[in-house]
Image (tube, rainbow, N blue to C red; front, top):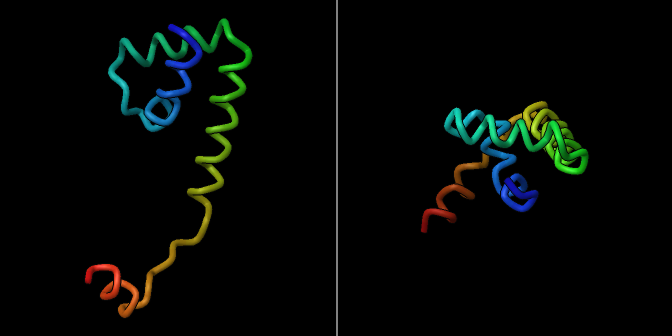
Length: 68
């Protein structure tokens, strides 16, 4: 697996959306490639930070305007 492929799969890897074989290939690549391992670690930190943000409910007039 190439670094470009891993970069395309990072979000799916972290979200558990990859099939077992692809997940294992990404993990094996990251075990050998420090750059991709750093990319996965950075993406993981971003995922955690985004989940920690408070949720926001848009006002009804904004929802209505977006739907129009």
